Length: 215
Image (cartoon, rainbow, N blue to C red; front, side, top):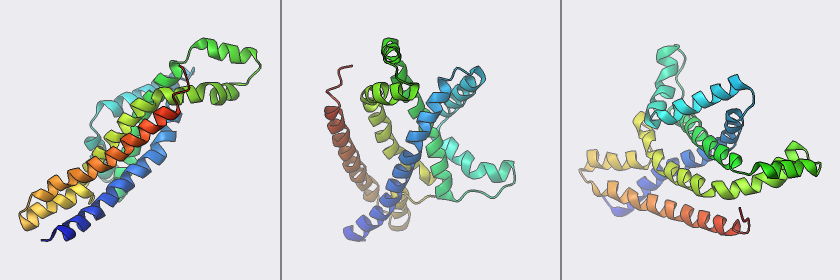
């Protein structure tokens, strides 16, 4: 089997990998912010409910969550199962929203209380304080941990194969079964390294751009 054919097949699988990556970020980043507000809420039942949810999601393996989302509706409630890719996306969005929420929460809570009080003295509303005073400082503080989680997400996409979503690793495994060759599996590492390398450069650039915030 030619190198070009294998590369093309792996590229097709890598497109699924990128699709999972992008959709997860698009939904998990804003959802994580909403969850973080729940974790910091002054309404005690909401705060504890949100923190319990985050604890459960962070304390169980992502692969288990993918399996539950895919098989759970049919086996537990008798509902129609989600399509495989949709089940993966739902599990990934929920999982990463929980992780992102803790990063947001730590970033927001790290801002000195005096900055809130000073802004209130100037007559700013809570929304103005958050978006004009707090948010940019929080972004600077959370870029390194967010970058780490996002790069981890790239590699976690390989877990989609547990319910037979044909991402790049599954495509490579098929060559082991069909052609008895293992090198395509190692070849997938090149795709991951290049993608993670690009993301690393992007986050390094972003950190430099935010370096003027002395916090």
